[in-house]
Length: 146
Image 1 (cartoon, rainbow, N blue to C red):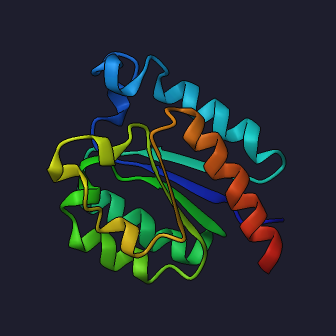
Image 2 (image 1 turned 90 degrees about the horizontal axis):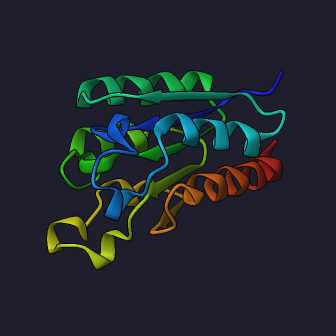
């Protein structure tokens, strides 16, 4: 059986659909999970969300042993967490960073993602659709190495 793709979501993403819909849209995290599972086809998906940085680091470490790839929307931790960067640098497979909004069109504090230093690729500004595209890209990357 193929290893799963971990889809990891950071703080406040549990509030999608009601949190600043003019920036993040009206899709809920449950909608995004369904979209990821559909895009993954037969590939198992382990979909998670946390508001706690240490939990996200623990999951990345778990993924190092259990996952084929990581799709991650670290939210605010993208711009603040060296601990998350360090854990991602230990992951041996592909990593795709996803942002619902275009972080480069936002305030300056959102322009430098530490996570991007470890990511194989980055998708930003395409709303929930970015997750579907990330999953499709992940499947292509994994097909090259498996």
